Length: 235
Picture 1 (tube, rainbow, N blue to C red):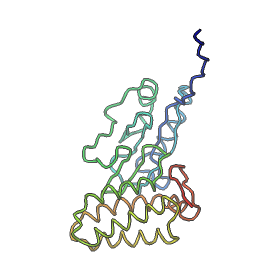
Picture 2 (picture 1 turned 90 degrees about the vertical axis):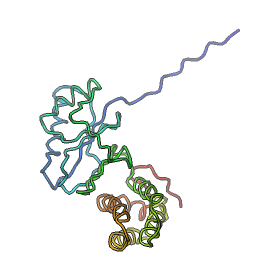
Picture 3 (picture 1 turned 90 degrees about the horizontal axis):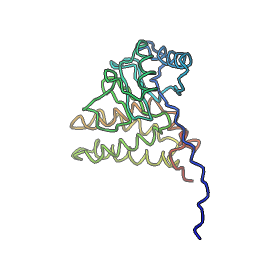
């Protein structure tokens, strides 16, 4: 006689949408702080369930396309967001799952990673989800570019390799105490001494990550932990 399958509870899946907002308390030029506060207040007023968080963002307040928003559940970024867009974002994107296309950031020149915004001219970098580890991202980016180097000059060939080695050690919690200082010295050399601009291009994005998220690197090195819980720290 066939047995009846036991009732198994459905897994609980968190479905509350999340918005992350670029964040730089030192500047007011793009209005990101007002947008953050406005999203929180308007969502509460309209009784729309949504999580609003500051993004992992490194910015000097000089970008041309801010304010940026990201929607980790949908894997998209909005740019040039203004306070007047808040109600449309909450009603159309959060409630109805529709994209507000005039705000959608589509950049065919950015093919490094789909979960990052990178503005070379201003050094602005923003991750799609605040749970991403910037050390892990830095390792991906340096190894991505390593395969693109022609290897003809030592500052590029050896510099990228040494950066890759250092970042891997940092991610694993095995880096020497002076790893960040060595990275900064390597990046300076890579910007000044190579035959072409490729090494400078690579080092520029790594320097932006290192400058904006140095505390994450130091946590891996000194405290032997990954603040985001992404990296496997080995002893």
